[in-house]
Length: 290
Image (tube, rainbow, N blue to C red; front, side):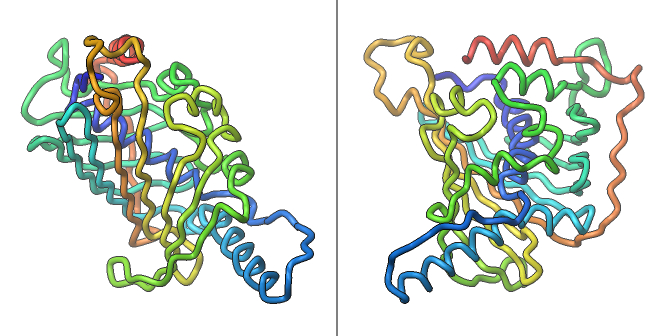
């Protein structure tokens, strides 16, 4: 596997994962009723586990009630012995998924906006093709190419599919921790990838399950969420027959934090005359890597 377009590629993944991860904890807050012949103590344990599942499923709805928040994203990509890191800070509209951020990747700072499922980026150090200030990538088209649904990319309020992919046995309470000075409860969550939209294709790259960790505050809102995943490249992506298995893997760790709920989010698309559409190039690069 080759890491191509590292600067933009890493940031695009951050933008996409932002909504995917946030959607992963949403739902209607309902847990499935289950019969049990276990002992009273086991039933108590099951009840606590089910309660944790209910809280995790309801986390996005609780968070969305605040309408907006400040957001920080830290991401690390590793492949072929190389590591790419990016850090982003900004604000997000929790209902619509629009956001404004400043992202630093490989020593460069980039202004980034997501508006109506379209990603816009501006680098102060270089012009986009055609001498324009901004580039844009249509995340809906990128999602379609990757076999993802629109709800995973641009509509974080639609989270029913993720809720169904999380069962009682997939949620474990780790303990209590402070995140940015706020008391939180830490849970480990396992998602059944096959139950997600586009799950068959996702399973080929991610495996059968997707591990997540979430930290919820006393109001049940997301304060931090982390995904550590390993993506498997197709065998044909390896140029050398003697490459080790690890050379066909891309490891990605994404940590998102939320604070200052209710903050103002001013996410507007740049003037059209200042924007170069790079969606076609992004799709072309995606085909090469896939």
